[in-house]
Length: 338
Image 1 (cartoon, rainbow, N blue to C red):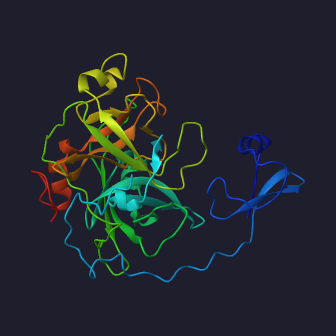
Image 2: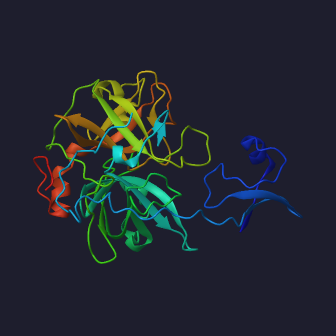
Image 3: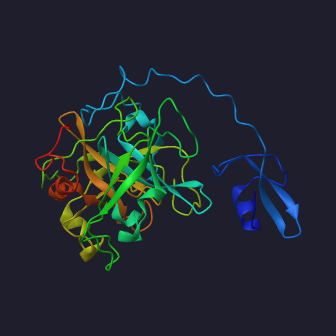
């Protein structure tokens, strides 16, 4: 398969005039430039995959375990602009949502968070067709370290059987109010997620629970590493951000009246760490009594890592009752699922 490549792209990549196979933009295969009557073309190289290591069963703890204890991760190995590459075990609730194109190829679409074995919480704006979205076009992967690689020892794949958007999701003001959605997931044989080192649920805080400004939380995603790039990060990245006071974020020097009570803002003190395009739907998690709680859903922001333009997140604690209503989960007063 070939595609047209314009000269500005070639210069931007800084790859020189040679035609060696390479994969700097994380395409599905290595590629090289070839000459054609239409100019420089990008052509995929026919390079075989390396042999896989024997499939390990050590990742799954003592066989199938659907009794999750939320907000715990095996270990901290210390869209995210300015973030560090991190193993998925550091954010085991991270869900990668893929969408199938007309040519049946799957492409990364949005992030999400596993809140129970059968449910993923994400952003409503990831589904612009609203009620007309076709659930069967989407897949969810858990345990994914890289969006263009497959690791069967870590990953679990699911089809999406239901897409539920918040009824009052509204973008008429350009601010994605009520930006929250639920995906029901199901495996090949109807099973839900199994707890492993790389797939765990995140906790939900009690309805209306609020954290004070200055608290440090974490974001994770596969989005662009900085504004202006035309490709997402291949690998999962994480970053640390501080919660901002609501009155500060809604002040004229920040976002003004675009900020509603359904949103929370967060950014790093030096404005170098932020969510970016491609991180949408992913988690903003905060530590409460040594467990990780989903406090926000990556929603929107002006640019990436811009001064006085922090990331804006859906305030999850405003939606416990809605989540309980749609899923049947008992989480209105917070959860340690199950």
